Length: 568
Image (tube, rainbow, N blue to C red; front, side):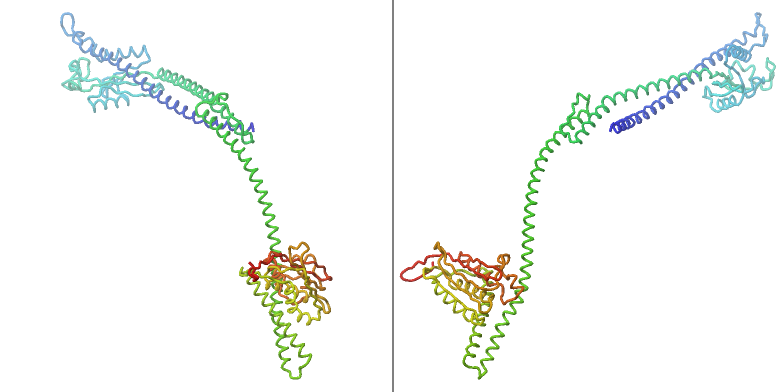
């Protein structure tokens, strides 16, 4: 981690220092170049001024000799006596003396010299051409290197005809002057030649190099001072405070949300101070948010656990419901198979027995047995159709109780009339009894009879020949319910099947393994009708030991008004 921080700090210094160094270096380089140009210009101007002053001095000597030419060549008695001293000799001699005593070179030259020593070189010819082409030009200067390799600053000025020069250079052309040379026939103002003053540039270059070196050293010192200042300021006011901020950020990232930064302690200024304060605000908000989040997470975890538990219960309930639906679907399939069988069986039997009645030889006991068989199948078919219709009405919510005064003995007697043909057909002994202490009570007689008929039909159906089916009515010992027991000696029902026999389309497993006729609606309708009265229906049974179904109808005392029985 320290290596990462060190590298980050180095990169930040590099990114800060490199651009600044480049910019300052470029500025210094531009400054040096500009200063060199300025120094060169100033030095050239200084050389020009020196050459100009010297040229004026030499011109003054020339003009002095020219002005005093007659006086020099006139004796005391006033007679003319040329002594060989004229302006050209005076200027050339003074220039030679000056050249011998200094490292300057002074020359008077012409493109048509009278003396070969005064022959113009290439640069001097350029100057002569320039002066002739531009009469207003007063000077001509350039840097040049001599044959000995010495560089000079050469300053040239024009030498023009004056009135004092006519005697030697004027008209008539070709006439011999006093110096023994032919006159050139020049007029006043014509260019005679140029005066060339050459100043060596060694000292100039040395001074310029010293100034440039000094400037470079000073610039390097300025650059070093700037970089040191930048480094110091960056370290004190940027890098070190940022290191503290970074350390605080790492602590927060590690989970210590109570971390805060003291701006004064880390010497944070301006934007860094603002950054530290904003960091403190952020850390406080994160700390608060984290605490609230922990509470919310705990709350959500509890809610999630409750939801998972609920989902598990629902999944279990769905699994149970799915299993029940699968079983119900299986039993429905069985139900429809049985239904078609149940509908065809009594109809086929009735049709067959009717055909038998048409036989004239059938009489006596046989004819009576056929009639009983037709009656039994008709009752069975009627019960099946009634069960289907009643089940549909119950599901549609169209069934309501119509309570009237009921006598238990009448119920048992009516039940016997319905069940005896079925019992005789299977040679089953049907026994019934109603206790004498049962009072009159309020109930829906039709639905109560339907309950008991379904139980009786089931008891006969699941009983073997020569078995006994008993139907008993009695008052509950506590006197709060009228009870009806329907007992048989049939195959019995297992404890597991006892949980489903009252569901629609369900039959005991034994009935599926050993099929018997039935729609699977009888017990379901019996249960719903019993519950419609506010009562119950239960079963006691064991495989191979028969079954006893008990119907309990809450006792409701009838109210008699003017001798009429009315169930209110």
